Structure formats: structure tokens, C-alpha cells
Image 1 (cartoon, rainbow, N blue to C red):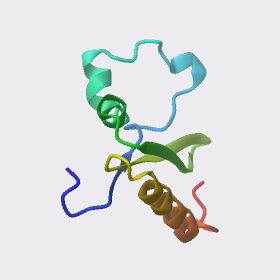
Image 2: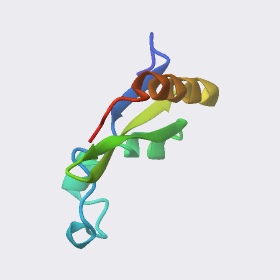
Image 3: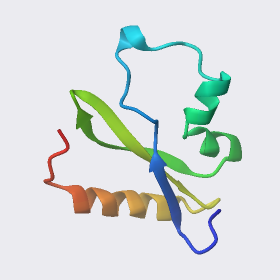
Image 4: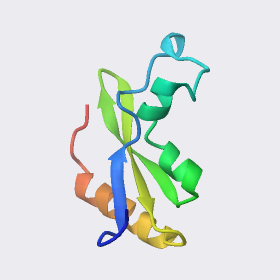
Length: 92
């Protein structure tokens, strides 16, 4: 997956965060597994982090950044670069 790239960036979730009363404790059902993008790093052990990207209708959304094993510094550098590029842009 990492051939030719330093990191993989994908949506952290398929939608904005749900309201508390709309959320569920069920996390690993068939549909949730397919849509829970952060599980790639959870099951592989690859270094990863979630970077908040903004809000839509007041609800947060984010991206996940994953890197090769032991490439934590690369992951942090990618996140810092994204934050620098997006600084001052409106995400609301």
C-alpha cells in the first residue's frame, strides 16, 4: 500500500460526527466495519493519527493520516504540512 508514497490520507469516517443521541455503542458490525476507515491502522499497527479538518453544520469531520511502520516522524510532518497549508482557511 505504501509503495511510492510516504503516507496515506483518507476520511476518518464517511460522515460528520453524529449527535450523541444518534450514536451507537455498536462499532464492529458488518456495515460499521466497512465504513470505519480508521480500522486499517488499528489492525495493522501502522502509525496513524486523526487530523481535525473543520465542521459542517456545527459537527466535526477529520482525516486519518497513516504511515509505514516506524515512520511516525513522516506522519507528523505530513500533518504539520497540512495544518500549515490550511491555516487561516475557513472550514465552517
